[in-house]
Image 1 (cartoon, rainbow, N blue to C red):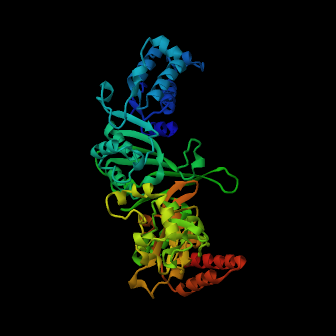
Image 2 (spheres, rainbow, N blue to C red):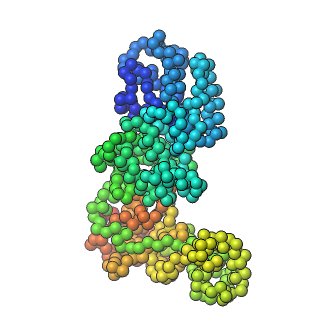
Image 3 (cartoon, rainbow, N blue to C red):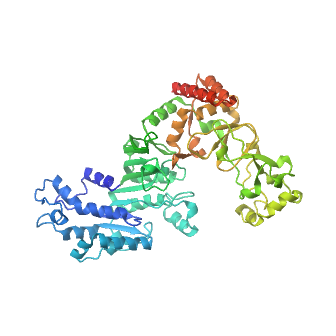
Length: 546
């Protein structure tokens, strides 16, 4: 990451003084234990030699020792270098233990320099919240370079008081379900000089997520992206936390760029090969729209372009999306169908129940689970054995927010949804998955909130069938296409959120009937080999349509 940042500076030499002294003010923001901070100092100590060599300075000594190549004859001394570091290279971190660790490590790592200069470098590592701390001389002027690996903290993990502070100070980028790292982009813009450069390693989901739309709009008006390294597979980055990340380098600008200028970006995609486990590097293409930003490889770009040109409909034009049920306490409402607890309940309140893991391509696996749809019960008529089970969870059920505010009875499902959604034909699919798994349900199954369904809108009934949509969405073409713009969660998992999925291009051409019939054959077949053969035919047909 440090290499990326300094490579950009080298290419843009505007940040150099001609006499060879580097005059850059640098901040490692949310520095943690100081990994990037110390990398910068190491680079700073050795950088002038390379830069002077570029300017043809022949006075450098040949020895590789520190003493040999830092003084640069009589003109440049170690003291000069240390003064530059003391005045130019800073880190800020809110965690006290991390700050103490970094300061101690600095003393040990650069003991020779510290003793030589007799300077106090402890103030270069600042204890403070990088999003709010602006005290002292250090923050009186803007920075040339920011680097960092900001914390990734979702809205649910942030206290109400701190969340309020973020909304008050970072309302341009932080709303609703935003992640705290969104705020660090705005902080970078505020801390940088115009023309200053920032390199962050952050989760890549701000490109595609609904919560990232405000951040994307803000960045569109305040920065020029120089390069992105897209780490789609967390295994491509050894320090991962199970999240697909990216390394993004950008420059602060004074005026918004035109579309073609904004999208003129150096993109590299890193992933792990399924064949030999090696890191695979690909050139990437950057596509921006009002809804999201996409980084595509060559194949994804070709398929996306062809589908966009060919299609008249978006999936959201044709279907409505529906989320599954939230019980608020599964143990009180979900049972094996053979359970004695629900044996005497009326069949009408016992609903077939599935979770995400029960969904396969085209069909649904029998879960042998039952949901008690308690919203249809009256308290004074609840069967004795089931009531006894409910009451064992009463304290937990009473503590649900909707019950506390009087919107639900204590024994109701937390979010029972509209029953009509479940009692009809529908395509169901998991919210998160490693592959496209769209299944047709004609058996009125109910499902949990980690599952979504889609139902054909009235105006498209009889014009486009569930089988046709199913055939497209389960095809190899759409496997590549959907995964190219859906939110990537790491470990190969993508998020099939309707906000993004509804934008998928759906084409209807002269091959409609053939696609529909192959899909119907797959649905009716119980032979796995036959289904595989039919799927290969379907994939080939859809590829030929492009």
